[in-house]
Image (tube, rainbow, N blue to C red; front, side, top):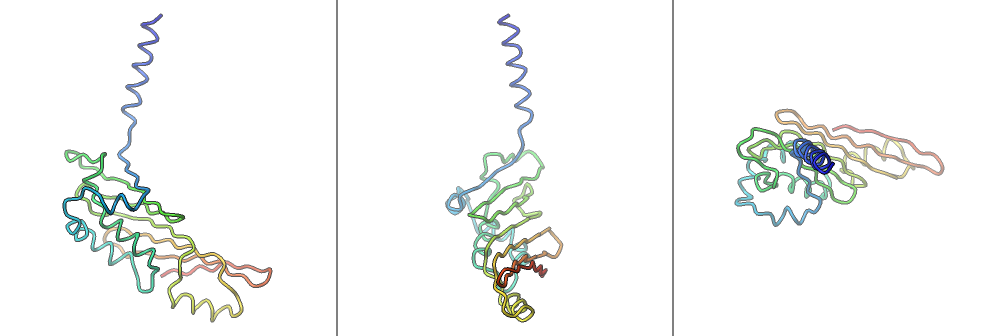
Length: 175
């Protein structure tokens, strides 16, 4: 009976070892700032295209800070990084209500990135456009989604809930 139980345990453990995924998650931005990276400038230069395409004029300072952290992250310092495998790595960055899901290639270059931000400051041109279109309405909730893919234009979408007395409207603006 003991051999059957030990055999089932061994069989169960081998099944779990195969099912592991190459995923890294960073939940504290301080851990990135003080990573074991040999050269942060090398990583930033590698992802300079992401920084220039994913950001636009007037974007909130919080968004710029998080994007800089994502661009400077060195996947080669992660525990899941395997230098002998040609694979991609998905890294989730979380700060407050903001999340970024970045996909890095083996070299550490960002292939794609989906960014979600809540309650950030709107760019001046967006807020004035809404204020002119809906006079007397106030901003209630602001959500921002930025989608970046290598060699494609990034897409920034603002979903704004405005309200006036007991009425509310949802406004979507894409840049």
